[in-house]
Amino acid sequence: MTIPEFGTGSVPVSVVAKVYGKDAAWVRAGIIAGWLPIGVATRDGEAVTKVENIDSKLGRINFYISPRKLWEETGYVWKGERYVDCH
Image (cartoon, rainbow, N blue to C red; front, top):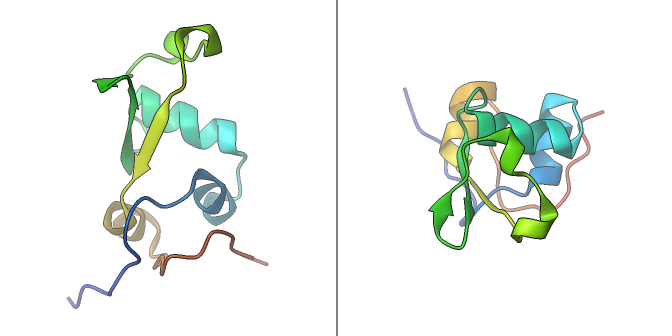
């Protein structure tokens, strides 16, 4: 199998939401809970793995979404675009 060339960095949550046909909250919750195995969520350098910890009072959660893992799960090749039209 040939692995395609991906964009550098993290895939934006908004792009992933379009690819899955869901909203951004679904993507964030899936990554945090672990049932969407395409990336990681961190706050202050520590992994966030419980949906109960999505409280904005605790600070910003950063998401890294792997272009390769997204491709492995969906077949979508992210080239670095900030927005995607899946229609």
